[in-house]
Length: 278
Image 1 (cartoon, rainbow, N blue to C red):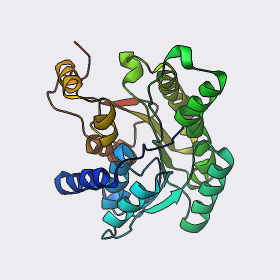
Image 2: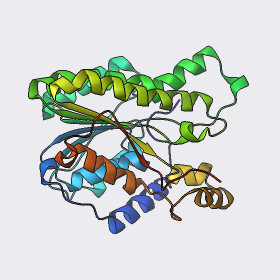
Image 3: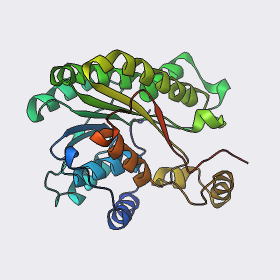
Image 4: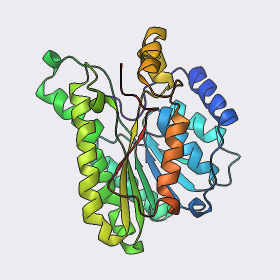
């Protein structure tokens, strides 16, 4: 099972990144400059938009992914940044490798101040086809690593008396989208995990929130599922008649990581254009 990003044609990744770079304008948060940010699944799609957004804030960004082509392209496209992001190849379902990678990143670059748990895989699946092994694989890629990433960065955040953890959920379980029973199970659990972590870590000054993206127009979604007919259905169900882009999710991540969100924790923040359905 792939973790973080779906393998894409390099020209598709390049075109998407070029459009994002030329059309996106974020608010500037001076407090994010020099922050050490760790992003899982940062090579393409929403994760890449988040990496780009924090790099443009002059944060020190490291991201994990398994798609080397997309990730290396992203690093090259941000080579002009004051602090170009660092890419580390890592399968987040391998907890031993994950702990080792995060430990090495922190030893080399300093303690993580902002963790963004983004890696996931929303491959469609039929209930009859799910074996116990498939269940374990799905939970591993969509839920389990969020907890262990948080656990790995926690000592440093506690030592600093501050930190931000952002977990990427999904509108899918709120909408009860079909052929995603395991995925929506994991994404629903992320909101519970967020509340539990926020309660336990608040005394250490650590804020934990969930970001709930709607039907985001990424290259993967467009290539696999968002046909013109499906796009029309999505727009018909949204309050705002425009597609949600990865950069809209990244903008929410910037805000929640900043001091402007100093009293925001234990909550879910939707970026879905009001997608209630028809």
